[in-house]
Image (cartoon, rainbow, N blue to C red; front, side, top):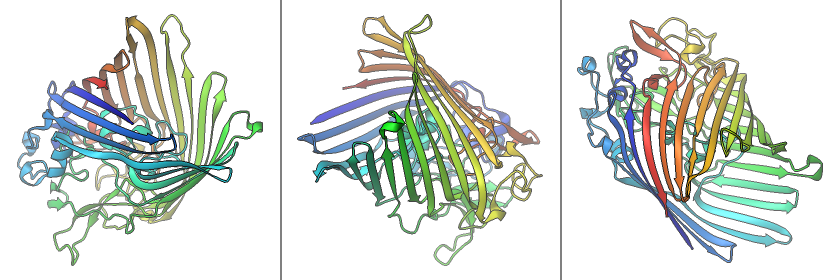
Length: 519
């Protein structure tokens, strides 16, 4: 039996002042005005506990739980731009909903892993079986989330926004599933998974510091005082997959002698997507309220792909190519629809990890890069909703404005993205003390992905620079600066559209200090 615990204390401060172009937009002001320059944006305690019970090395169970409390969110009142204070807020009564309070203020917690596993040999074939709640990650992507592993699990977008440069697999949230692996020969293996539930990706909630819009996604109850509609738009129940059981996938891995240590993977998955479109909804017999907005999720997406990984010189390299069928495409948000634009897309990536040699500037460390490429093959459904650069009805500067461009989050045929992380390390700076300086940079190089989520956007950039001190392995102190950058359009000095989901948070530069201890 093994029981490990981690305690983390975090403090953060906003270092950028409110950008009037963002703060004067009623869709963003609550998030922008929650904390002003110099305010503490985090006073947080996180607890993580994991218990592993193993019998004869072949049978066992694992349970992992997390809990948190953040005093920075003790005030449940939303904050608005004083010039917009006469408008209704995104929360009824202008106070956080229970969901937002639970996930931001707390104290609250959740069960993450909860599963059983068994290893057994049938004939001459070793089998590994896992059943319960856990995460599974396929493909070779390190940072890009639109590849073979797209929607394999919901992503914790709240954690991802607060921690730029996180690897995708660190952000996966568990689902109930069964997973079986078989090693047919020393060079051929197979894996199959079947899901018994489904959950949506988590987004920073409206009215909190890093929310991309005040109406997102589960916490806010309305879009208050929409001037184009002339009324409040209530958030309606999401249109989720009818059957939340049955997502599945299979993969095969080959590493024959002629590949000289390289591994080839083949994949096929069928799934319902985890990031929604946001559409308008008409009143119904079941819900006679005035029309509102709701999240709508694409169903029955399919992915077929191939991957490789191995060693080339001093580089550990990986790559993948995937073809996505009937995947969700960027769609205009203010349309009455129960399904968005769908299409077939290609996705490819190449990444590498290089161990830094000892030199004058560092003792060791690593350099990681990932280059991604997306290409729209063709649109299969609801092309009239597709937001692309040559479609003036949907690609506009703001809602109902003149024709827009890639700068307004409109899709292009092709898109390239780049992620780089450099982590030089200095060993034994003092007895038992190692120092590391992680620097992460992610950007869209050219074009905007056609897919509705997970893709890249040109010039939409995240930057993270930190200094990390590790003492006797179990103590870690980190000082870090994080920021977002993007393009935007303004009308009468108010930002009305921009490129990528983070454009509305480009004035949220912040500094944080975190202490973590494991025992």
